[in-house]
Image (tube, rainbow, N blue to C red; front, side, top):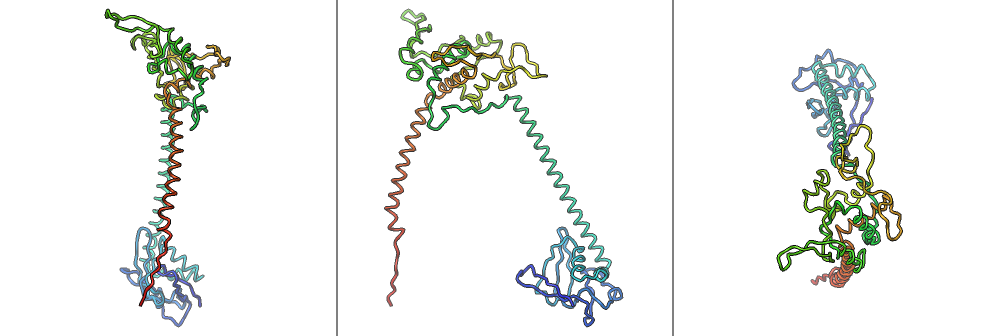
Length: 401
């Protein structure tokens, strides 16, 4: 006599012991599906039955993912309906074979009804189809992922060709939270702008007086402004006149208007540099990479006459030639005027021109953080002093009869 433990999924803590043949004292009867004809008694007559069906008194629902077929099984010891989550009846057959150890009787048990075998084959086929659908979906997802990666790579390549090569990030000394500009670098950068860049690019938002106390003294700045001629007026006679520059004057314009600028530069218009580090993506890094990024065009890349190859410029072809060459300027403090040094200095100067209030803003932010920290400590102390009595009190109720 064999016994098998069956756990009720509705009540996991209950276990039912099912008697499994052979047992000649039990009059067995094969179970049938609802709606299917009952098997002949001749096909089920045997001295050994794989399962004593008079032990079953309730219905057992055998379900798969795609079909649900109710079985009428006489159950005596199963307390309630259980749901067997199997792919098909083929798994029930294998289960009975494992617990009984009799291959021929398991065949007899499930082979008594041809309709049951047909239903079993149908459910097994549905399970196979379900596995095939899973494989198809996985393959479709894989294909979609590969297509997405190829699309992203194509977009990245086209974006690089349209907007230029992404400039690297450089360790600028004024990028820290409490860092300030290198004022010596600002002075050197102004010299580079004045001798190299000012012939084509304007800085219409910067005045000479802005340089006082930042890169030059007041006397140096006045002498520098007096070197230019400014058109002013009208005078008492209603005529325009020229005068020497003064501290309130803006940096001079290299061209009278945009048309003159385009005519002098082959149709290209040199942009104003007052806010260039804020007007370009990754401003400081972009300007430095552009100034120092001139290269010979690679094989297969043709550059139109009058343009120059620069991978950091959108399109790769720029009208401005390479302007920063070693020794192009002579620094007053003896700093070697290399290409990288001049690029660093002029970018520092342009960064200051775009954000001259940066140092004051950082200092004000530090002051506010310090004051708010003191206010937070005071608020925490007041809360502790005010609410500690209420939060820590204990109420005792004395009930008097």
